[in-house]
Image (cartoon, rainbow, N blue to C red; front, side):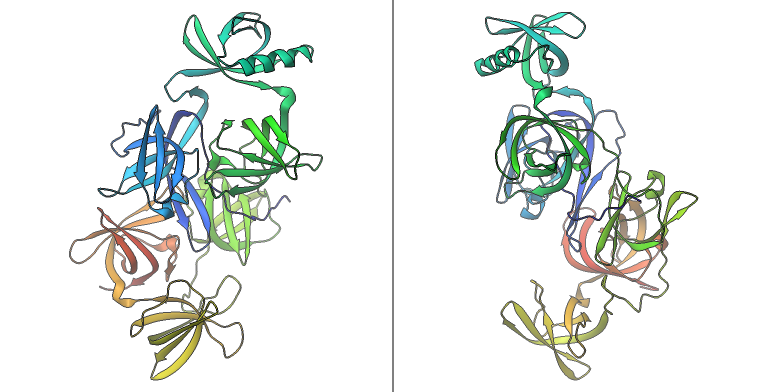
Length: 498
């Protein structure tokens, strides 16, 4: 059985060249600190940058505090974006830009499905050919292609010509790969050259987001060597959202620094396999929460362990992000189904601690050594609880509290909810987002319409049992003025009547 435990969250990726693809949502499950990347299904063969939904589609070329610079063709524009959104976007990534307010924008990864057809930013087709350099004439490379024909292509780079000539002088029958841009019948340009002898075959061990916003790959070879590879500049045959730990890649190295791990300046990175590497059978049942769905992979949190499983996509279409599920083997196949919770009055943390619920009013807050001591009046009694969260409740305010205990007699506040923030809505529509999150549309008594996600909030119902017509109390932490209004919430309670 080939099971692996997830050590890091997946991150989104960077692309250098444009091509066919479709829009992508990026939703962060802050509760689990996992970035979830969702790909929407294309309805047309090509998604145009003139789509009215987008301001533009382009490459992130720089990231600043509160804004990003996007390159579309040869035009660069700056967009004001929230820092939360910025931290979910990567340098070199192709994104779609959506206008949210008069001054603010949001970014979503733009997914390319087919890398067999590539273009420059100016729309010129890039062809990859195999061949040998026969000679160099006045800055032109005369290349003999695999079929025996000859191609004359300019490089515009004396260093590149010198590099190719030097390589040919030290190797017999050297075959190179060329990325060629053709402007006309008589005008071609060598965009890049790749030498098979400089190729590293590696296994991805870890994916990291640098402070600059670039995705960095930590990988190893069969001999145990460790390498660090940046992804901003190399040519790639994948979206960085496709990458997972355990996949095989070929890295064409322009330079390798003698360090540990070795720093690789890569010209090109090829993903050799994009199939998940989860288990194919189970000797036991797994019950846990779905925290990510990527391709055929489902990530399930059980206790404090995240396990990754390879599941048939048709099964995954019926599963929701944040849902409690049961995974088991049947006749050699992995079966994934909702796990129905009968009683929500008794709840536990992932580590098994009982979650206690009580109501009360905050009397005072004392902060000391990164620890907060909150005095709460509940049922005419005062109690002092520890709280380590960054956002504090307000004094003289009534809340619904949740607490856990690691030591008998000591309470640690784990969460609190303000009942004054409740928006009561009737569910009018349900939809499964591309990342697997169950999204609901709801209407309040005044006709206001709200769009609400269900993957993160505490709920008192099974997601698979939610239906149109249900009445919900939604605790709104924030409401975006849009249509429908987007609600940020940490608690949704199903009620029987308005």
